[in-house]
Length: 377
Figure 1: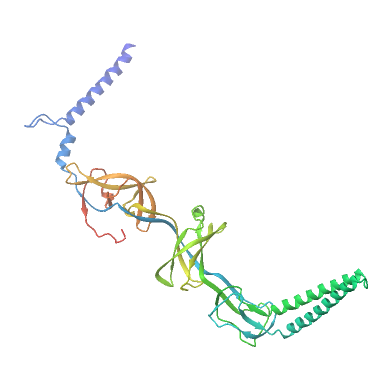
Figure 2: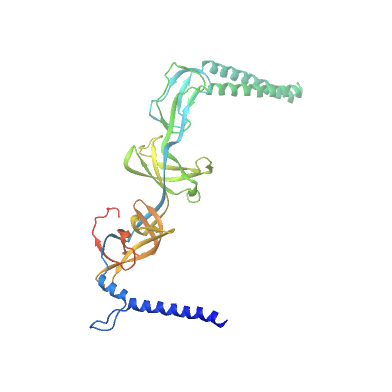
């Protein structure tokens, strides 16, 4: 029985001894004239020489102002705008405005034929005068007990009816006059004196454009960021090269279920009357401004595993060369071609913008290729 366990033990000891001898034989080298033998890996590293220098493009961390904003498109509209239309049918007898001129609130713009209505007003005024005289006489007679209280009540009711008839006649006549509901600029009229119009027909549009609105929509994720009073920058295709400042006036509380967006309205001062309703606008809503943001080109960012890294250049061991160092960073605001660095770098640090794929490990020596960067960086 003892021999059953003895043979496997002897075999295991033999295998271990043979493996150790093989390892020693493979790693030993003859001692040179300068001293004892060295490991094979060290000899191979010495034969390979210094690491290869990699040429890269770089940029420095800059301090500049950045704005946290969102881009959208919208349309301009008047602060107040209306198409003037008659409430009743009639024939135009007078037009008291010129196309494109400024008008004032309450100014008579269009007069319809009101001869019949004015006659009804005069008739109602006469009936009112009679009703007033009868009621006054009944008051005097009642004081002398010549008439009953009932007669006085009837005359009072007749007086109220006459007053109502006059008010109705005056209101009917007033509907044949169209006045400006607010200060504004008249458009181009569609009618002339002598035209007979049905009720609801278009006459002329009136626009108040001393201040104009821009209506646009933002994705629903901005609904907690956009607030009344925030600033927005407006650019118009019709006026290239010019920017206008707008102020957010209102945010729609309803989120559109189809596009998952919120409606925003901003106002723009238009005292010079350069802006017109209907213009196409490009809107940049500003949520915040950082005056001293640390910024690098966006191509310096190397994403990996849900994190952001950059390759920073630091002095080498002899301080005469630059070597690579992989640094994790936290990014902030992004703008075209640029990205803010919140954590991980400081002003003046140098980062690689091109050639990162050739820097596989930290400590690789690098050579900087001088390039002309865009003026905005």
